[in-house]
Length: 248
Length: 354
Image (cartoon, rainbow over all chains, first blue to last red; front, side, top):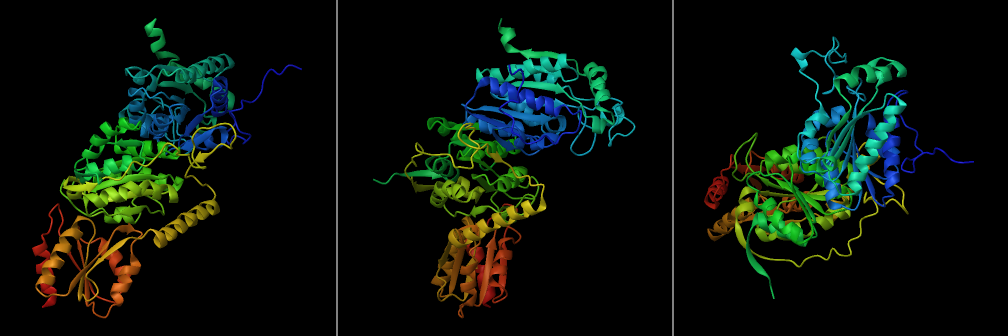
């Protein structure tokens, strides 16, 4: 019988702790399969603080657990001293766009030859549903229970658009996980972000719009619908920077 | 033939680090330690190492975390306010047991304080500094040569114990120029990454994790005990201390770092005048040389011990713990960036003799 699907070698057998309907599992698999495709001999990943904190148990490669927001700095230290290894950081929106804003901006500006996977689910998951830097206007969270207001909290941050303004990055794309078609597109983007690194092209980041049914108070299906109908409106999908295309 | 050159303390530390096998430096500018990153920016590429001027002290210490976690000899340097920013990373480094070296060329505080020499970060260096139960191996060199000697072997100690080593200097030590003997380059060509290092190798080994998160209380408690067993072993094997003219001393002065040199001059001046005065100088500030102080406290000729510091009195607490009430422990200090003279110390001691 022909094998049409198997678990990527880059994933361990440790069961994910993620909630039903959460996108982390899908994204983990895509990251793992992208690395599998590279056949790299050396791989080092950096896990964030947040729901993906235990990613070090799931990825079947050497892993470092970084302090909150510091993954791009940790990945920089790793990559510069181990240039022959594939190095990636996996971060959520609180980690990357709030407490770790300085680290991600400067890693991008230096064009560190690393791959960053950025999960944007517009909420703090691990700590229980507080407002994130990407929480949308009017969206409810435990620290903005009437919905995020511009007067009190200002505006959400569009990370991909912002980083694309820098000269440093090689490739920045925003993708989504709300249906099979978009998962396929996300897979291509993540493959590309890792291939760029293998080819020494510099900093690549893929922002993945993701669901958080638990903290949004929705069932998994409604959560995916909400990604499609609400998040994609505020956070448009697409390629924001691609130096390979610019050269053509 | 001896290779003797004139160097600033900061430069000596940087060169000794290179010769001691350091191959990655991450730092952010702050006075009075800027010669270290400046020197490294030139020297590191010459030996095939990595130099990055990071966006912040926070990023620098986390770059050290990343590089050190792969088993590479990595370091950072800063001064007081910058070291405060690094405390988060230092706590994680201790929890994850990553060997590295951190240099603190202390300036006066609190807050932005001043840029003149001080010893006001003693507590921060030896009692932990960041959150959680941990310690570092802390050296307090008193000369440019001692900076060089301690730095040269600091990475060996860091890797032996899987701990960060801190060189606790001050602005004076960083800026002073003295002749030094340069040690030979350590041969790093056969350097094998340790068996815990996340060097990325995928095949022929289990995947490794550098981490300080332990959700199960029993697991974390075991880690806490493991860390402190290392510190006990360090206390046994790594403690360094200098004693000067204590055998017949009635008053024993104690100081570390550059202050100890001023104290030594004061001891000599007092001896010339016929006063029986000695000095004890801890070289490792953690582990603190408790046994040496106990011995001094038990000597019948010793009437009093005086801690002399560039602070409002920090090391004196460890001195008192070691002396354990057996002899009175007095204090004399200057702070804010002011430095006492040997004459000031002589005057303080003569007050005690009255």
